[in-house]
Length: 81
Image (cartoon, rainbow, N blue to C red):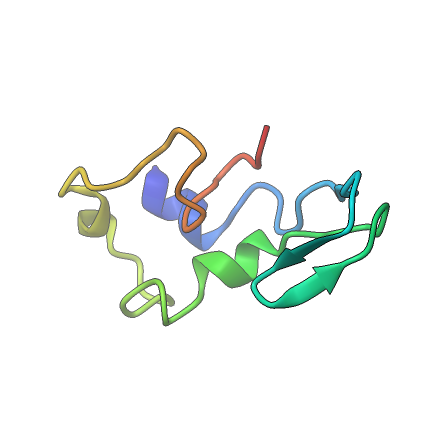
């Protein structure tokens, strides 16, 4: 199930969020109240995060190293809180 949701997320783009203050994320300045969209599909298919991201491989989730509490931004099948 986890691998199916990684390959085909329920929401490819998360609901837009707006920062309450200007901030810097990954070296980019995000102005206060700018609309920010998170592209879940791109993250779930990023070869710098996932080995062979286009392949269906449920085994990648068997090692138990995943943090599902919302602190690991490599996998979010249902969005962010």
